[in-house]
Length: 203
Image (cartoon, rainbow, N blue to C red; front, side, top):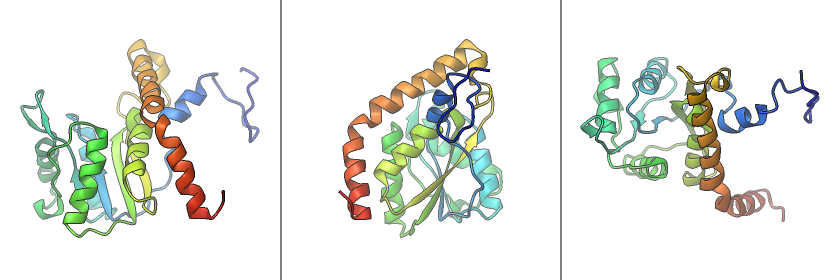
């Protein structure tokens, strides 16, 4: 055991635990939300989970997002919609966003779709791959109004916070995510500080 004791007094198991905490959102008990968001992708697992959450009453609508994907030869939205339909989600409960080409598009376009459909969102639930959880969360937090509360349900199939450091492929994947987080969001920090201080009435 390395003698690394962060604030709070709980020793870290590995020196790179800080990277685990950066990339992987700490999961908490989920609360019912106004919308279940699924950022685009070609994997099935996130939509399987989102459909289970819908059936469990965790949200009245699913909003998968994603434009054309050459690997699928169709839009990611169509791919994700068909998974939900096969799992018994009513088509009228699946909102449509089929133009996004990146994560910021997923968030921006999803917010537009919600407004166009008159869906009032105070709490949102994001379902995504576990190693993508922090970047997805920060992206939606950047785009959506700051009054919206988010929770993340992670698809931890294969790569998760407990095993990412066990093989070279997963290590590379997580380190790349850490780089993307710092690269994508560094310039947003001053705006976040300003918005938080304005909201709390401090300077």
